Amino acid sequence: MKKITCTIAFLLVTILSFSQGNVYQQEGGKFEGLALTPPMGWNSWNTFDTRIDEKLVKEIANDLVDSGMAAAGYNYIVLDDGWMTRERDANGNLVPDPAKFPTGMKALIEYVHSKGLKFGLYNCAGTKTCAGYPGTRGYEYQDARFYAALEIDFLKYDWCNTQGITAKEAYTTMSNALKKAGRPILFSICEWGDNQPWEWAEPLGNMWRISGDIYPCFDCEHKHPENWSSWGFMKIADMRKDIRKYSGPDHWNDFDMMEVGNEMNDTEDKAHFSLWCMLASPLFSGNDLRKMSKETVAILTNKNLIAINQDKLGIQGFKYTVLEGVEVWVKPLADGNWAVTFLNRTESTQKIAFDWKKHTIKDLDFGYEANFIKQVFKVTDLWKNKSIGTTEKVFKTEIASHDVVTLKLSL
Image (cartoon, rainbow, N blue to C red; front, top):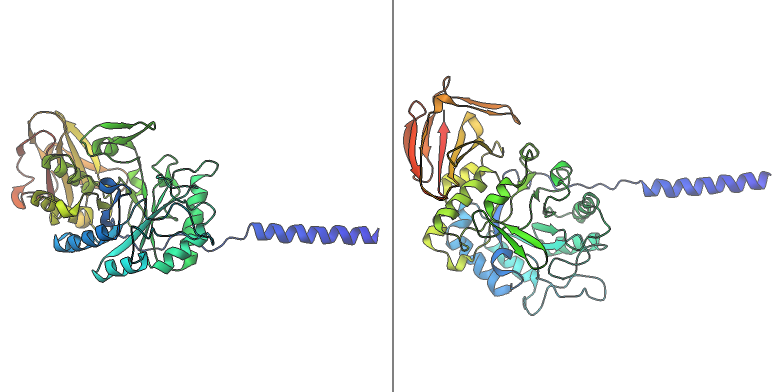
């Protein structure tokens, strides 16, 4: 009996030991403070798909600086899918494609850093990336150490080929792995919004995608043969309801890379950029910087609009009302100021007459209010960079189809 009792006691101790090991919580969570305002940069996917190489990256780095975009705040260069070989090496390590990057990824990253820029890479939570390259599932800590050794600054982490795993667990594991590796790396969660990342991702990532991929059109759905869709920028802006309360400094709703300079006209590009700034979305251009028109440069580097996006209050704007097909978007700013965008969603020019005193704008999520009877604001047209009076006067203008007017209201 005594021997049996001792044996049972030994088994209980053993089981408890293993149980304690299984519930051990490793220190994790994102690196804090890497994205106090929405991150800005350039991503390769929209224009180049997997057709990326060392020459392209160096030319983009040069153009990012020479065009004035870096000075305007675009400081990340992110290589999306297709930078690695189709298989890991014998030790399970990811291998940057030597044909695409003949001097090595480390040397290329050093070149980008030498330009005063930051560098990011892409991978996926599944067994394969969306383009069929090695995914990170089962290699999270190994890959995190690899990224830290390369000295990257940003990781975009996609959600293809993830059968059998849950989003929150997968992104928690990778977030913890990056933290364990020790190098501050901005963690961009690209889960497409299917599992409501805004409800659980704030401790894990600095930004999270809220939709599937963007497409260079105003308001279309582009259906792919593989039975999935890409979306025009207005479709994405409309896609999620009641999620702005989850966004803010260091935890941003990401409305996807921009299509400014890709296939749309300059008017639609201007509307696209205005809306992304109003939404406090990360601003990542997805065009070929080497072929930008002066109009595209002017849109992407408009300091007035970028200041709205980068406002230190960090609140995402919202659609306040619609007047004859013209949407009125508003965004609370620091110091009691507001940004207001009038966006003509119709196919014809629209006249508007907006009597400020007939409107009281209330932000129910964050508690801000603009009462135009009690307060008088100075009004600046941010695209024209021109003062146009105060809210004492009715705002009257004509807005072309798919065009915008963006105003700053200042106390």
